[in-house]
Length: 179
Image (cartoon, rainbow, N blue to C red):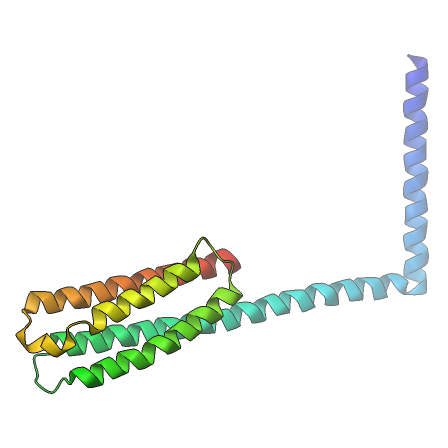
């Protein structure tokens, strides 16, 4: 037993000596000014990488906002076209608006997929969402006058459902990556 106690005592003395040697190293580094430089460099390192993360987060949020605005614009155009009873709604003009918004939306969704952690089949889900929006927004526009009101309302609801699914997905992507 006394042998184990002496081993434990020797280990404690060695630890104290190594701690005192570490303290003497820190004392020498601080007196020479090297410790201050090391601390400053470490601080700059953390500040630099945190600022890069904040920059990426802000830029990605701008992409998310652009996507959300485009989806909202598609919803609004669809409501105006399908639910407005005025005869001034031109099917060709409406299709042109939707067809000009969808490539821009696809471009921003591609930007987003490069900036966030990708879940399973996110790009495929985005593409399917765009196809569904296009299909539901533009199919049968030339027959709008003969269409029953409940079918027009159904089209608007389907478009809103597709845009909502894409919005939820991009919010989840942003949350998983940055929050």
